[in-house]
Length: 406
Image (cartoon, rainbow, N blue to C red; front, side):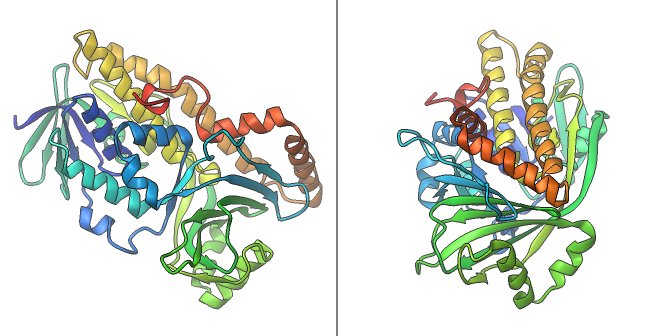
């Protein structure tokens, strides 16, 4: 057996690398194995997506000493506006003056670069990328992964952080509840004439949500936002093939003049939307985190934040186990992780799925009823506060890393 470490993390994306760094802060060593080339996935233009970081997730980045590096590159979300087809009756979510913002928007490239730089500087992390895994093995005493070059990596606990198509999860044979929304998210960056005022817009149309996410102005003071436009799968290819001029005309029609004149600042990309949730989050010396455990619709921007709650919970459980003299693969402690995360993840995913279906009901009557309900929420402070706290991730039993300076 080669180098043995506490954790054998399979998948070095945003969630997997955050786990390695958070675990290192508590003294846990790890192997991180990823098939992707770090230079390729951090190249300009590789990924035009942006990610919302909730208040709770920002606490985690503070606790692993990344907040100061990230802060200059993030755009605060000072308000969230929710509208049904830009008709009267929208909801405006704004925190109280003494509260933090509702979150921060970061380009995925910025998050990756920051995490990767921190991992390279962390002696407790051994990063293998690009690397192909040809064999995985787990028993009552250890776990291992054999790479294509013949090297064998060992760990007390194997963590699957490979994303929705996790081969480790498939090998374990865990049941997966899943369905396809028959929708596709189209991602593109926008420059626009008017400032966004740090407001995130979620505009619902019958074919899916149309989200405008605020980004920092460019160096020449150009106003920028990230667009996530959900369309029917059968219409996606047609939308992607539109000329830039025709595409912008469709975008501006849905924005109803919100940001004035609009231009594209990146290429268009897309990905299919689906729901998936595992019946179990653990196996023998195995834990699932992030999209390997649960994948959801991006309607509320909670996917990555849910993965970071997995990270915080797993690190806390591992720390407690070590205090009791248990190794990281102890079945009892893994059971605590599963119990902690399973219900929370399912509730968030069910709420997201419900919103997707509610706003997808076509017709004027359905739209009128939705706007009536939205108006009631707008006038009810308690309800607005509840939804804002959910969006910020500050409800329920939060791991210590997501609560305060740990």
